[in-house]
Image 1 (cartoon, rainbow, N blue to C red):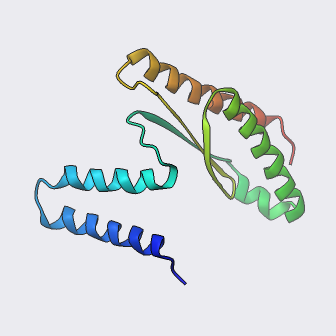
Image 2: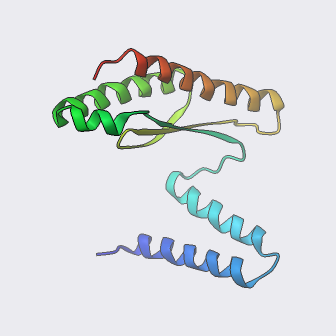
Length: 139
């Protein structure tokens, strides 16, 4: 069954796609619709954000050689450590899918250059520590 919210979201996506195809110069309205749609998930729109998407190199090969229970335990430990690092730097985890981890940092005052730089630096610090964690966590 599809709930009303899913139908509304689908209708917005279709409307946005149709607008982009049929109305030259309608890009700004389409962008507004997309922003509203994205905001409906979290209630916030951030004009400046830095997104990190981490994917473990060699995971597919490792998954074929390690028992599933060990693999799940490994990801649980790994992502738990990633969560701690993200929290430490004020970066928010968005989602994990398989061996992928997505997080985001944003500047509360995007007009201030130093805050944009600090945001990028915080997300890069998270990425750097993720590399260290991956290298030092045994499956």
